[in-house]
Image 1 (tube, one colour):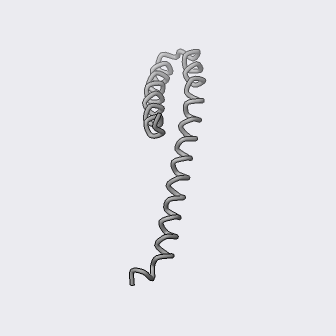
Image 2 (tube, helix red, strand yellow):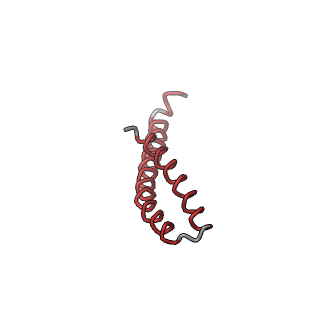
Image 3 (cartoon, one colour):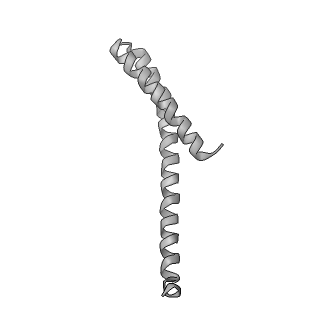
Length: 77
């Protein structure tokens, strides 16, 4: 599965669960709130891990691009 597709899927799942949790809070169904929290936590952790990985890859690419520009700067002058 594509990493971006997985991130989108996790975001959608978390949005649905957050809505359900909000409704459970309004209804004061604290057992359901807790159950939803326990369901959401691993999904949030996976989402955070994927986002960190994507940010790391973007940072590395930016550094590589900068380095390539610096090394080849004289070739353009």
